[in-house]
Amino acid sequence: MYTSTGDDSKTAFVLSGGGSRGAYEIGVWQALLELGIRIDIVTGTSVGALNGAIVTQGNIETAVNLWSRLETEMVFDIKKDTQILPKFDLPFNLGGMSLDTLSAYAREMLRNGGAEYTSLKTLLSENLNEDAIRDSVIDYGIVTVELETLQPHFLYKSDIPQGKLLDYMLASAACFPALKTYEIDNVKYIDGGYSDNLPIGMALDKGATHVIAVDLEAIGVVHRKKIMEADYVKIIQSSWDLGNFLVFEPKNSKRIMRLGYLDAMKSFDVFDGNAYSFIKGQMDRRSLNTAESAGKIFELDPGLIYSKTSFNEKLKEACDTYTLQMQDRIKSVLNDISRRKVVNLPNLLKRISDKTVTAIILQKQLQGDKNHPFFAGKAAATLFKQETEAANYIIRTGLYRTPGDYLR
Image (cartoon, rainbow, N blue to C red; front, top):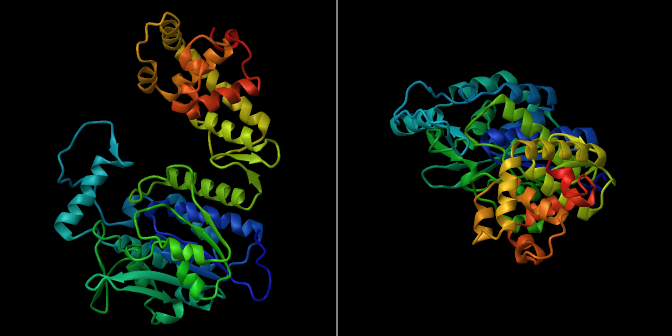
């Protein structure tokens, strides 16, 4: 239980690296402010170092406004119109990154040793005040790594020379080789994630008694042993894909800020749920787990706060819409199953969408099918756990009671 209120207690807010996923950290900070949790120490790596400076400065409006308008070209000096990779007129991306963005990064890596920081440095200069950060009662630290020796540097603001604070922040965020190394006094630095992407140990060494850490689950070294050494540590991370860490896009930033806020609130027991957020106490643990399976399959919005009633209404609406669209396909599969035309049913179900699989399992359960070995035994529940949980939740909550309720 979180009880950091005494004079001897120190709460550290530890922020991991993760590029554009950093908007999630600002959402967590919004929740901590709303909950009235005092922050005494901030440590961060890469984007966590940049966000940590804003937290130390103490201006949530600046953080929200900044992240709500960030685009890739505002952060790094890349030009999408200059490509070195072949241009494909194909509607796909790689890990959330479009081909033109990928080719722009590749161009900078191969021709210039990585993207430049001019845009990011200007952006930070306009929104951060070194004196305000140094004068803050919050202690602030960052992690960076020397390129030549790979020696890590764990630096608090008191360790950094006056006028160099912004430079060391950028050194912490030098995500080489996508970005250039960052040079300070003839020494080249790279991203702190090469040494410690979640600097909990740094906060503990400073005397933190309570640690609230945000893990963006990006590439980088995480020292799990240090996490175990903390007397109180709460790690907040998302159940959802937060996007490609090199692609900054306002719509996604707003989405993941909201997720960060809700996840922090759930972490402190304000709401129930894991992937989704529910009003406290309206569902038991079993119902929550199966409700979330159904929500994921039918793609309900994780940015909302649901009552049991509102969740079920949204779920039924999504089920009805999908069933109407795919009614012929669902009926065709069900007919093949009933006529035993399916030689290998599991392989068939693995080739169709999770929504259709859920619809098939739901229909068979509504029919009370005791004859088909796949549905009568444990095979369906074992191979298609989430889909079976979703179907069970839909039946148990009475959204559909008979086969006729489901398929028209």
